[in-house]
Image (cartoon, rainbow, N blue to C red; front, side, top):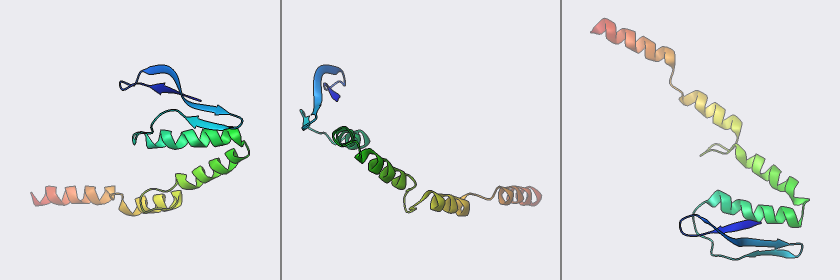
Length: 102
């Protein structure tokens, strides 16, 4: 399912994860780097062992996709950005006011 790498990131040719119809075996130590990749490996294993779970996994990922910072959905992100984006007309009015004052 996945190949191992050495300290320099080169492929070792040895498996890092073995998967069969009876389970999965991780043949190395999990380091704290690449959190997203490390989260994906168990999902792939579950999907191969129980294909019906793929739809549930995909749905859960889609539901989390819109979460950014304190915003819980894509709609909240858009609404937040609309309130925080600088008003371009206000910038131009300020420029004109500075030009007239200077």
